[in-house]
Each structure stands twice: as C-alpha cells, then as structure tokens.
Image: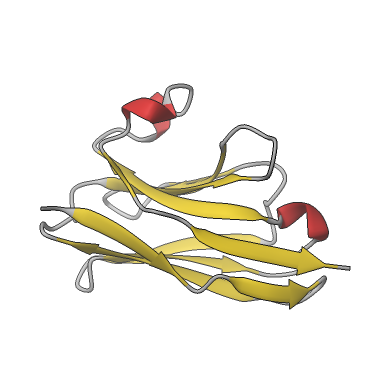
Length: 125
C-alpha cells in the first residue's frame, strides 16, 4: 500500500530553520507532483509549496516565498521542505501530498491522490 510519511517537525524559536522530509513507500512517486500543505489550529488547510514531477517547476504560497524551499530526490522517493526564518505564524501541522496534477487541484485538496499523516511545527517568539 502506497503511503507518505513526514518527519522533521519540532519546536523552534522564531528565526530558526527546520527541514521537513516526506518519504514515499509502496510505489515510486517519480511521476507525481509533490507538495506541502499546512493546517493551523482553527484554520483550513492551506497550500505551502509544490514541485512538479520533472522537478523543473515549483510553486510557493506568497507567505513563504523567499523563506521556504521545496526539493525532491526521486531516487530516494522523498520530498523536502527547507524552512528558514521561521515565524510564529508558521506554526501548524505540515502535510505532504502527491498527485498527478497537484497544482490543478489546489482548490480541491481533498481530491489529491495521496496524503501523509502530518508533522507538527511549532515556532515560538
């Protein structure tokens, strides 16, 4: 059974960095767009970043542009989210997702093919 498993979350101070990982298993995700979403308490899940299956295209939410970087290693079946200059408003559960056309389905995230279980990121000031 194919699944995604996130890791790397934690509790950090504002201005610190974290790198999240999302490892795929049960199938190869080389031909899937991969992305990260987050959900803060009391808020809806929101898009953070995505990278195309080819690796040539990336997309970021305005709130994280210039601070977060998404990358992928298809040989390891893993996608990463490097988060720098973290802010308290970045506090959320971070989820990775995979889909054959992820960006086209951003408005309907419930339709994405695969989701991980999430990893908590807490940033205190």
